[in-house]
Length: 181
Image 1 (spheres, helix red, strand yellow):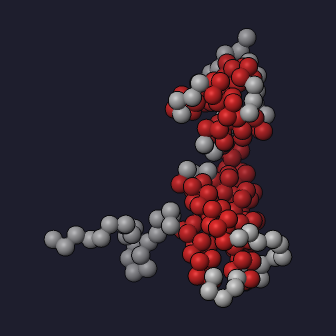
Image 2 (image 1 turned 90 degrees about the vertical axis):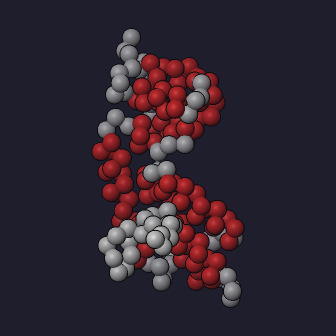
Image 3 (image 1 turned 90 degrees about the horizontal axis):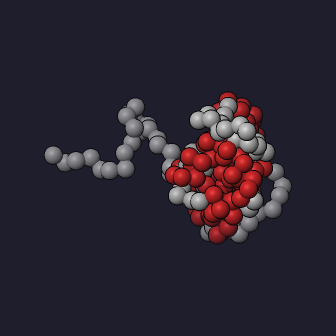
């Protein structure tokens, strides 16, 4: 019977499960898979399909690319998604037609996107952000008077987690005011 090597997906799942302080049963329940399946994957006795790997990663609150043996596969998925993201940004002034959720729902979606950024879930970002940006641009164009500032704040909130540089200096901006000593 094959054993889980330190480089196999089973070992990585077991590692992240232990970091999350979950039992196999708890992780299996959270991922909606049978505990026997999880045991076999962790032992290296069976592989994990993309859907199982994504369910396990979601249950562990990590990006599923962390479970891949070949991180280049995740990088290529991210690179492949960049044109859609670029298109969504480029079409800000003429957004496509489509539905627009209520402002509280859009704010929640933006908060989730910020959480993905903070958790370095780049595959998740590249999958979901183009549609979210398009929807935010549609909402901004269709906003009733007075609601534009709230939508603009929601749209730009995704930048709050990204370090920026001063326009007049190449030094990174900090969140703390400078000392007056």
